[in-house]
Image 1 (tube, one colour):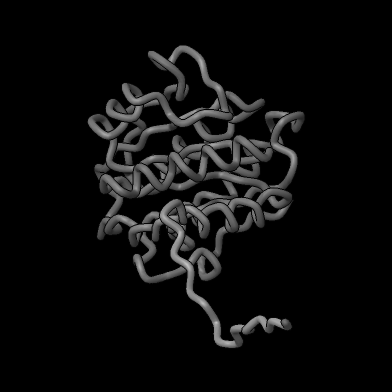
Image 2 (cartoon, one colour):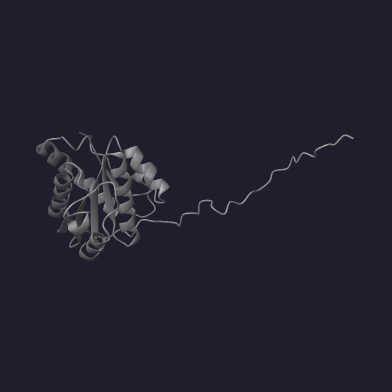
Length: 204
């Protein structure tokens, strides 16, 4: 006796119960019509020279746009330390939201620190705090890819020359001062503009 085996030629759809869920839509928080009088928080992830360059950006922004630097803190517990490879401590996150209208964070200049700096930035956007993540030319493509993967391809990001760690303070101050006009543009950018549209690069 011979047997034959039927062969299916039409496609079969398989539903995986453990498959990935669709990400909810994320948009930038509304941009303020004016920066005058707004409070800005600096969130430092502990990378070399991060505090120096982020604080300089915030202070120069205040002198040009009339903002106030209301908080400078590390992202770890009680603001006393920082691990760049983990999310912002929940208590520090809540403090930033309570004490600031705008956020600047970084440095996104390595693999894991870029991932979590982008993550923190998006979390602040979700609760209505326009946030700018500071990255470098070498890690700009990674920051953009991660932002897209996390659901917000139009993230506000400011790109400085690489590297920040190991660069002398005078040069970092020059980079920060040259970047402030771009920083102002990022905070005032409309929510429908992608990061590719932002004039966010600073040349060394």
